[in-house]
Figure 1 (spheres, helix red, strand yellow):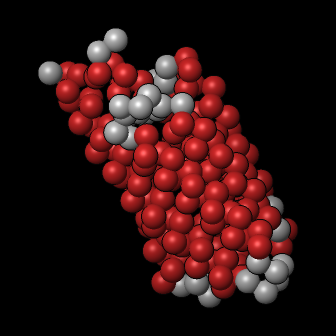
Figure 2 (figure 1 turned 60 degrees about the vertical axis):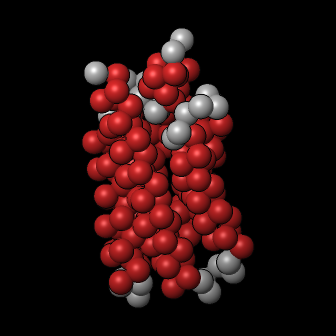
Length: 188
């Protein structure tokens, strides 16, 4: 196995545009939440639901091209995001009350999936650190939200989610550039 083949397998088999689009979406949601943290809670709930749903869809799209070792993990990650997103859209007012718990669960689950995926990548893969960083960001924000007293930290919740959107989006966009570089090397 040459170095390029190992790197290709390690890119979670997502096309660079899928990673870039997910990253841009995360950035937009993150900035919207940071610029208007006091927006109505239902609107914030819908933003979170949209991000979880789109993230899940992108993970499933990436799973279509994933190697067998990464495919199951990407499918689980995608299905979890879609389920969380659909639940939020189906009952936006009821889930607004549960917003903190849904966000915590989604961030923790998403973070764990990405960390596991990152550690399963080969040592020489340049994307390994970014995938793990993205997972740890989600996991740390989820744990910080768990530590907040219920009902007291809604503004803090919004700000933490906004920061996760921005920093998570940046890491996904960086991964898309790495993926595009590997794909162009393989085509050459």
